[in-house]
Image (cartoon, rainbow, N blue to C red; front, side, top):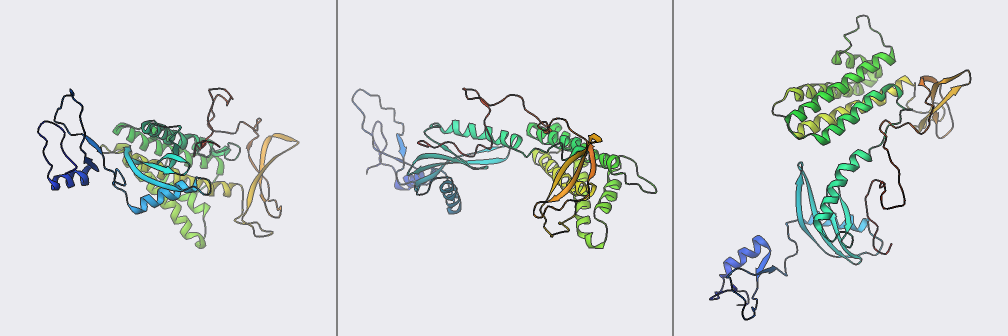
Length: 371
């Protein structure tokens, strides 16, 4: 029998046991010759099983998805000769699988969730590639999020700032107290929205509710944004989103059984609800139609300007990208002096050509050898 134990008094391994070893571990035991004078400890000498196609289980759909991704990122004519899932790690309940790919242009690591590829010439150590990928997962959501220009959302800049702080806090949350704090921050963002609307919209009612009565004000806001029977479904959607976000945030603030998933749910629900209602509110305040009244095009863009006799006041109007129609201009706030200082969150430092630089994101691929 070819497979055998190496050590004093060699014994043949039971075929059933050998099959179990192969099925469970993907390894086979091979005969190894030992030189004279070398102590024989009786331990197993284990080598990779040549016929094993993958080190970790993977479905055909997974293999197909990884193959299609890799070929989609590769030059035309690239062929995948072999691939196997070699490692899997869960970080904050997000699973990352590592695939070893042998292709016609070299060997590559493909790491999932989000998926990216790394040349094994540049990352010969898999652990280095995984560590680098984890860093990207933490940095890209923060640094590559679309920044909201202050010039566009002057009135609601404080609300967007609270949403950014909420998202950053989620990335640092590690225990129940942190998760509860996410609920508190979500509440503050929702309250900041209704407070800002009261200041900038000037909507009045016969018996105005208290300034911090979120449910009452969200009812007023949604009724004003989507009035009429033909907008019943839109109105209901906004009310439901805001109401459920408020309910969940209040629960999370005091939940002793809070988990990271609860904190993530509060953050994403709040961000989604406020994102939708803010878009509708800005269009309402700026009197932006659903489509161009001249040509019917939905492609409308904001155009900002000022008057010579009022240089410190910013005006904005909708303009059709297709026919050039322009709507009525409305005052949107104080004119910003510096056109390049419109980021709510800014970074210090600059790119250089030296050894130290700030990388551009997203870092979706590395430069291939020879490119």
